[in-house]
Length: 557
Image 1 (tube, rainbow, N blue to C red):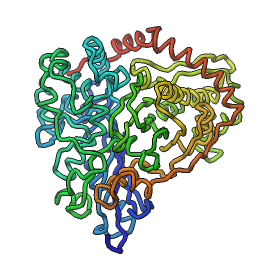
Image 2: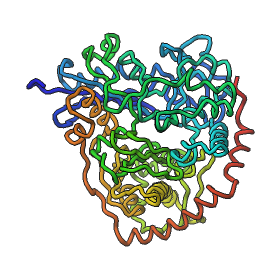
Image 3: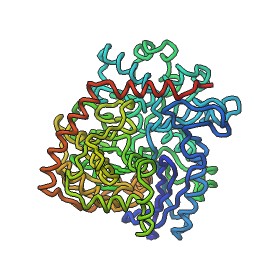
C-alpha cells in the first residue's frame, strides 16, 4: 500500500432509505455519510400510479430503481462530504435487508420495469417484511416434516414466510404468468452487487439463511415437485448461481457504475451481505458468545459458535454465514422500533405531544423520561411483542400483540414501558433458547438507532442478565460493509483482521442491576405463560387475523 491513506465505501440499503459511508482503511475512522430516502418507500396499499387496486394484507413491496438512486446520489455525496480524492477509494461493499427478493430477467432487469408487468404486484420487489407467503411457508414446513428433510433442523424446525422459497411459491400460486416470466429470483443484496460489477454472485450469508442451502445443496427437486410440479425446477431455472464467500471480491466496479458513483472503475466490489450479519464486523464481535443485536424497526440477532447445534425456532445456522471458520446463528424479532412508532402514532393522547414540544424533545423521548421514573413492575402490565408477528422462536407472522393488566388507571406511559419490556423479554426468549441448545451467550452487543434510548438499553441488560456493549458507530451496517470491502480489496488478509482494526464497541456499557434482574425474572415468568398460551396453543390470534383478512382485503387483479 502506498503512503497515501486509502478508503472504502460501505452502502447500507435499509427498509426506507440507503446510506453511503466513507471509511478510512487504516483505522476505521468514519469520514462522512449521506442518506437518500427511497422515492417509493414501502408499498403496502397500492402499486405506484394505481390508486384503485388495493393490495392484500401483509404485502410489503419496493421498486428497485430506488436502490440505484442511492448509488447515484448518496455515494458521490458522501465522498464529496469526506473531502477525499475518489482515486484513493479501493473498494465498495454493500449490505441489504433480507430476505428481500427481486424477480428479474436473465440480465437482471426487474420485471416491474417491463411495461407488460408493471401493473402486477408480484413483479415488484418483495421486501423482507412481506409476510403474505405464510400459507406457502406452512406448506413447506408440513411437507418437510412429513418427509423428514434433514435441512429443516438447521432452521429451527420452521421455514419463515419471509424467505426465498415461500415467496417464490406464493407467486406461483397467485400469478403463474409472472412466475413463468421470472428468469432469475434474486436477493436484493446480490442484485445491487450485480449492478455494480456486472457479475451475478449469490452471497453465502443470504443463500445459507434465506435460500435453504446447506452442505452444498438446496432442497431436492423431488421435494419441490411435491409442493407443486411446476415448482420442481425453481432452483435450476431461477435460483442457482455461483456462491461468493463473505469478504471476497464479487468483481470490480464497471465503467457504468463508476459514472453513477464517482468511484474509480476497477476497484473491488465485495460479495453482498445482509445488514445484521455484516454488523458483527463493525462491532469487532466475531468471536463465539457475542450476541449482536441490530435494533431498529425490527431486531436481528446473530452470534458465532465453533460447533453446529440444532436450535428450535432460530432463523438458521450456516457454516461461514457470518465469518469464515465459524457457524453463524441467526434469530430475530419482526417488530421492535415499529411497535414503539405505532404506539406513539396511534395510542398517545395529544397532551403528551404538547408537553414534548414544550420540553423541546420528541414524544418518544418524553414518554421514555416518564417511564424511567417508574419502578420495575410498577405499572402491573405484561405485553407480547408480536405486532408484526413472531420471527423467533415461534416463526409465525399470524401472531399479534397483547397487553394484560390494564385498568382505568393505566396510562400511556405505563403501556409504553410495558412494550419496551416486551421486546426485551422477546430477546431473552431467544437468548435462553440458544443457551439451552449449547450455544454460549456471554455478552449482548447492540447496534442500531435504538441505542440512544438509555432506559431501553438498561432494561435489556436487566431482563437478559447480560452485560450490554454498544457499537459506537451510528452507521454500523454501512461500516461493516466498508470493512468487508477492505478485505475484498486485499487491504487486510481477512474480514477478521479488518474488523480488529476498523470495528469497535464500548465494552459493558450497561451492567445488569441485581435487584432489577430479580424483579424482571418474576415478570418474565408471566410473559412466558402468555407466550406459550397464545403462541403454542390457543389459536385465537390466528383466527382473528384470518377473519380480518377476509373482511378487509380485496382480490388481486
